Length: 273
Image 1 (spheres, rainbow, N blue to C red):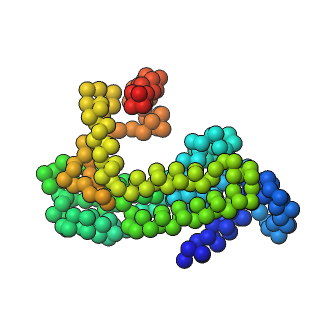
Image 2 (image 1 turned 90 degrees about the horizontal axis):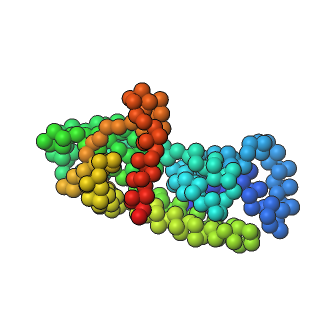
Image 3 (image 1 turned 180 degrees about the vertical axis):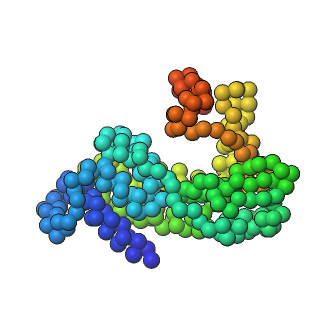
């Protein structure tokens, strides 16, 4: 199965003309002319950053997450590529509710009906590692329930291994690529991704953040319900708000956008320092 996945990755890379990223900087540059002749149907008029983004989206959620991480490494990639990768959205089709129920039941060794008063079958959000559902606890409190995707650990492990293999191959044929230390970049991404596979770690970080800002009024952190948390499941207080991307809605609600920006910067630096 792994070899078929690798072949598919190579196919996507060639389809979107990603060979120019490597071959144009190596002794294998003549091969690029051969590929351009054989694959004449490729539309290489599309900017290289956009082609890379489309390729990552085609390869699935783990590669999308890698692209998102790469967009923050402007020390490694060109500005036009970094700008395009910031457009990557970590939105993937949700997995079936029967799988959600199975994950929760196995984690708590109890049926869903014993854990929640009610549980929305349709997720409010779905990403590469987990998805979120709204529910009510037995005493009626509304909560948000984050559930890991089934078999996500194996999926991520396979893709990370392929990423590392490709990084090794790329740095073997290009001194320019080797200078960017691609295997170290993949290793950094792997550490970050692995930490997302245990939701109790996220719950602990959320609780710590809440304690750090308990005396502040500018940031409200949802309460974690630890009795309903496991490695595969995280339950927290449901909160209502407006995304900062919805500027018109914020203005309609009378929100002072410049002040919101200042508050956001203050909160960020308070967390860092």
